[in-house]
Amino acid sequence: QVQLVESGGGLVQAGGSLRLSCAASGGTFSIYTMGWFRQAPGKEREFVALIHWTGGITYYADSVKGRFTISRDNVKNTVYLQMNSLKPEDTAVYHCAGDRLGYGRRSADEYDSWGQGTQVTVSS
Image (cartoon, rainbow, N blue to C red):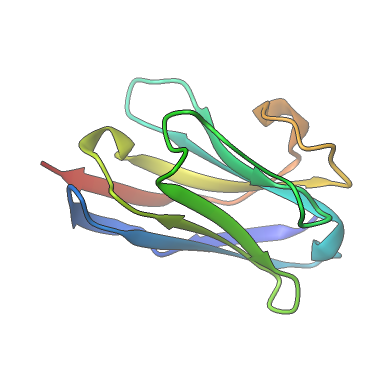
């Protein structure tokens, strides 16, 4: 399993942007399908975006489509989440997750490597 560390969270006004990073170590990053999930207080963890280990396929939750972009750099062993046009409802702890040779499913149960998370707070 890879070890994952997120960074880039913070406080931003509605309409602003943030870029989250997730650095991987201890495994072959290039064969991991990577996902971003988020969990707001009192709510279930929800899928945000994923990028297949081949790099050519991405999926997004409807709530972020057109505003968020997931990408990866297999040289830097890092996956990114560019978040634009942020809304207060995007406020949550964001976690990255890895699924070795994963098919690209949206269920958190498919992922066996998780980071600790980074807080994103969007003020209105």
